[in-house]
Length: 278
Length: 293
Ligand SMILES: Nc1ncnc2c1ncn2[C@@H]1O[C@H](COP(=O)(O)OP(=O)(O)O)[C@@H](O)[C@H]1O
Ligand SMILES: [Mg+2]
Image (cartoon, rainbow over all chains, first blue to last red; front, top):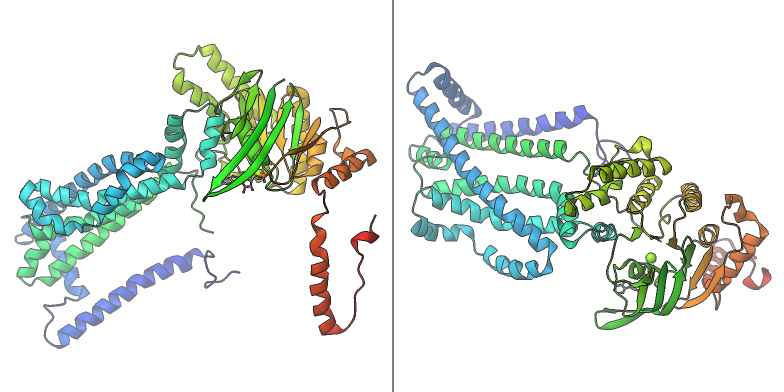
């Protein structure tokens, strides 16, 4: 079966990219229509049009290039927000990866490890992380540590369980093969289970990185004096919804770029692994 | 005597119920000998091979290799699995050299002469298995037959005392299967490998083996050991000789002792006949089992 509507069959490239572009056009149209709806009632301040957000972008670019006030100040704020938010996410994410990958490999490889860690974490995992915010602030204060801890707790458990699933998905045949070649039980983990799981682990990292950005905004909405989330709350107070939209778009673009980076890395590093798409 | 299995019994316990897979099976594989193990599906052939490999523990009985009792797997027994167990993240050459990689993990101070010898031996295996021009391919880029050649080469890398194979050609098309059968036969002739092959393909079992061990349906017991009366160097054409076909007939009868599983024939004919009769009204005459010699 071929044709544009054959389930799971590939389609010609122009159709693919054309459809992708169409998706964005539809989004813009809906946005334009919603903005027009509010504008007709004289409430354009509640819902800015794409053009108004374009204006904010232009303003930012002017601030970055000419140093004219107040545009320059807005741009400097944006750059500082981006820097600190990026630092928070990356620190928490790195910490999560460094702890969750070894533990996940342990859980997936050894039943003892699974019994020891998994039931406990399944329990902790069902405590909603936002419910921990007051406690985190009491324990770690309102500085960086509490925000990083929140992001960490939001991603660590998911990542650990996803990594252990990847290890468990490796066919047991591959492990038996290493034993018949003189491999030890440790080598079964380091030479077989881990290399076989890397593509899946990197994919889990990609997903968790996306969630880390969500937790970042939660952390910054609650208590912060800089960062993307903080700025969004601030603009809310002054009813500057056009600037809120700008930050939302920026967050979307960051997410998209990071996602692409992970995918690109996977494609280059794991040339042997072709996800069965056809 | 290379491999000696004595009084092997294996009982699986699954969900409270006990399944007896093998019952008091004893047989040997001599030095340089090629032994085929055949039996109806589910009779415990794979289980027997996994016990010989040390991957599965017998409930009772013992496995000896060169008069030493064995426990657990080891590189003295190479194994080729039914599913392709190549490591997909390694190229053909890296897969074949994988046992050397394991050796390097524990033995840091190998003399460079040993390392040179290993590289040379891996090259030799690539050549004799006809894999030289595929050395840099990844397993996903290979056909099923090529994958199984790599798996055989990899199992030979450690120069094992015995090669254990579990239906290695079961998933291949008929032509590729014969190609690999011929390769195995000639390999045995040149490299003097000792092999235990599990298969459900009777022709394959006869063509390759010096001796055939026949297992009964579950619980697997040894029904008979048959020495194959052909010289070691055989052409594929031998499969069409009367002697070969006579031996095949004998094995077929052994495996299906108590009636071939064509007992379903009468039932199928009845269903077909009824349906056919209802739609066209023309009766069909068919042969019955008794009419055929
Ligand atoms: N791990 C297991 N647990 C329970 N039963 C098993 C297990 N492995 C094999 N069996 C049973 O033992 C019998 C023999 O299996 P196997 O050796 O795979 O047969 P064969 O390779 O001859 O087809 C089968 O009936 C199978 O259901
Ligand atoms: Mg089997």
